[in-house]
Structure formats: structure tokens, C-alpha cells
Amino acid sequence: MKRPDWFDHNVSRETLDCLEAYSALLLKWTGHINLIAKSTQSDISERHIWDSAQAYRSATGKWLDIGSGGGLPGVVVAILAKQQGDSAAITMVESDHRKAAFLRTCARELDLEFAVIADRVENTAAQTADIISARALADLDSLLSLSTPHLASDGVCVFMKGARWREEIQAALVNWRFSYEARASKTNPEAAILTIRDIERV
Image (cartoon, rainbow, N blue to C red; front, side, top):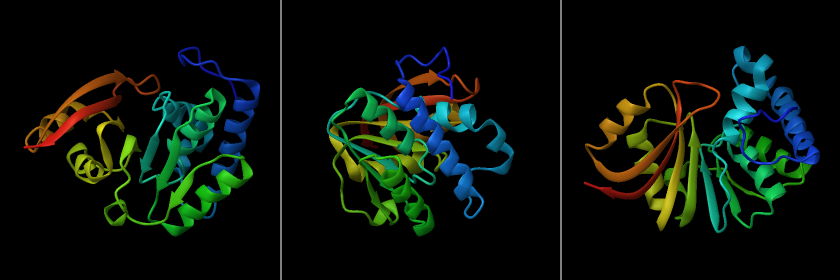
């Protein structure tokens, strides 16, 4: 696996090997449970691994990845955080017990440190997270409802959104006040990575 030129963190050979091993696990398990779409498997590196890597930001404290599924972006974040020596404690929440088992397998086989909660995020005890991430989980208004019970007072949300992200922001502003930064996705020119803070319900 090769680091794309646009990715602005140094990535060691060991980390690239770990990302490659994670890709192999995704493909292997997708044959049994639906982790990634069949149409994207041939381009797993860009469509999933490096796309998810865009959510990574150096972090300390608590990082909560909700609706983790196959670990995108959670496992990718954990791999990059390990290389950078981040002290963030990463937790992934996934209600599907088969997918939660896959995440635990990733932690074990890739020698990563993260916790897995096999439950719906609505039923999970408050996490007081400094960063909450999600990819392809729900619309922005719903994501804010799911996230705010688990977000520290000065925490931020990092949400990976598709082509309708501008519409989702306008719809969410009916029920919420927040500040945000939108970074154009390097893997999909219509998508964006939203960093949201100062969240308050209207």
C-alpha cells in the first residue's frame, strides 16, 4: 500500500503494512458479513482506507467512533494514532455483534489498543469524548442527536459526509447551533469532512 501524495502525515513502512493487513481482514470478513460494498472492494485502498484516514487528527484524551461497522474510520484512526504516539483512548461503538467481533479481531491481530462497545450508541453510557467520529452512519441532524450526550464540553465532532453535506448542514441548523469547518474530500470531490464544535440545541 502506498501513501497518497495529498496525505499530510508521514507514514512509516510498518504503518503501511498494518493498513495493508487491515485491508486483507476487511476483504476476508466481507465474504461472511457485509462490511464494505462489493463494488468498492477492488479499490479498497482509496475508497475506504485513505478516505477514512482523512478523519485522523492528532489527539489526546478520548476518541469515540460511533456506528463503527467494519472500522472505518475507527480502525484506520487507531493505526495512524499508534504510529504518531498519540495518547488518545479510542472506543468504537457498533450494535451489530458480528461486526463488533470483527473489530475485536482487528485489535488482536493488528496489535492495536481500542475498546469495543457492542450496543447502540443511544444505549451507551455517556463517554465524555474529546473527539467523536462517524462515517456513512446518518444525516447530520441525527448524528448531532446521537453524539451530544457523549461529547465533552469542549469536544469536537469529525463527520465524513457525502455530496449533500451542505443540505445536511442547513437542515441541522433548524434544530442546532454550531460552528464548523468543511474540508473537501481528497477521494471524492463532492464529499467533505466536517469538524463541528460549540454544539447547542436550539
